[in-house]
Length: 105
Image (tube, rainbow, N blue to C red; front, top):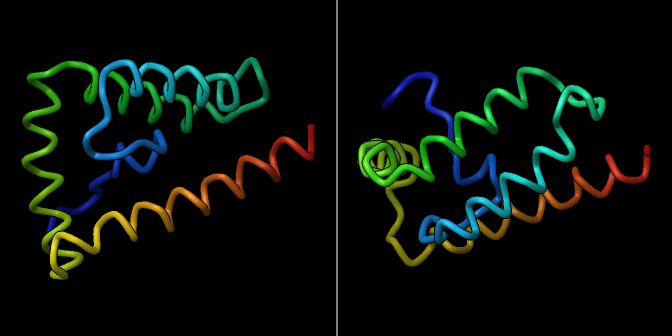
């Protein structure tokens, strides 16, 4: 199991098979919320930027996906068909978090 592994797909709220356009769109929407000039955290912004840089670059993404699969299998030895359900659950909690943020502003 990898220590300090960050799920960039979850961080950006995208699917594992997301296209470059989907990655860019997710990045831009997250930056609007988490940019320090918009009242967001510098740490969160840095992580989002790191996620975008890694997933948008094909070579970095290949290396990251290799580690992602190792981490996913270590944490969840369930069959592959259950991963979509887990993604949907995480995505729903992210949507709730964003709605609470929007209500505060």
